[in-house]
Amino acid sequence: MTRTQSGPVEPRPLGSGGLVVAAIGLGCMPLSGVYGEADDAASEALIRQAIDAGADHLDSADMYGWGHNEELVGRAIKGRRDRVVLATKFGQTRSASGPNGVNGHPDYVIQACEASLKRLGETVIDLYYQHRVDPAVPIEETVGAMARLVEQGKVRHLGLSEASPDTIRRAHKVHPIAAVQTEYSLLYRAEAEATRKATAALGIGFVAYSPLGRGFLTGMIRDLSQVDGRRTAHPRFQGENFAHNRQLVGRFEALAVAKGCTPSQLALAWVLAQGKDVVTIPGTRSQVRFDDNLGALAVALTPADLALLDEAIPAGAAAGTRYPAASMTAVQR
Image (cartoon, helix red, strand yellow):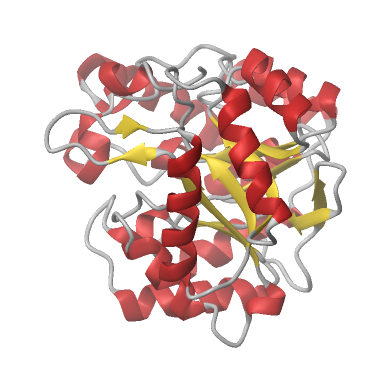
């Protein structure tokens, strides 16, 4: 039987600067057409549903729909701003062809923040991330500019996304980093473990994105004909990699049945069981799936459960990289 969530979503701290968010928030990227067409009215209703349910952590970025996502989120939170932890990201730049570029120059940091605030229709961002580290700009310079935004009252807390442990440590010396965002799930966790060790040692919160393996761990993607949108470019969803990963997920699904929950709930419960410094932001366009995700908070995992999950999908067992080859060069810098 599927468990359902009632009452407030469990609060967890991000860093030591007083930022507290729901253990399960909402990743807003799918609301801008990444995994198929999205309806703005339905997306705004979903965001309001998340806020009303207590899932106060909304995660956007200036490159999600190249401004569309922030505008959408801005409209949806009107009248609810005091109940929202608003996070967005900068640093990726649009390319006419090929992978996105990156820009971490201090002047661009200020420019990007002003543009995000305008699209959001807000005067302050609660959590502002560098989306991808710019190898051409020392992290100290980028974070120094981000720190000035805090001094100006335009940003409350700083974050990094897909940064290496060394970069995180250097950034944290310039200004306290509240959170680091990295892909983290049962399927793709080996690469993130070094990041988790660094954030834990520094007292930085860890935000797990794609905790459902970009849909694999929902149990809803069972054959290649169901792979669509951005997923088609990801090696994990191609040919032999897909077949291998689907076999792993089959073992996982059997454990969800035995636990009496959905695969999505089990996957999210596993992420949250990794430590109280961990929160997650699963993305969805569906109100039904959002409710299902919150049901993970009612799934308690024992040490024996965690051992079985580790045996079903060992660290590093997934086939295919997390992103296409060109995009992989931009992560863990």
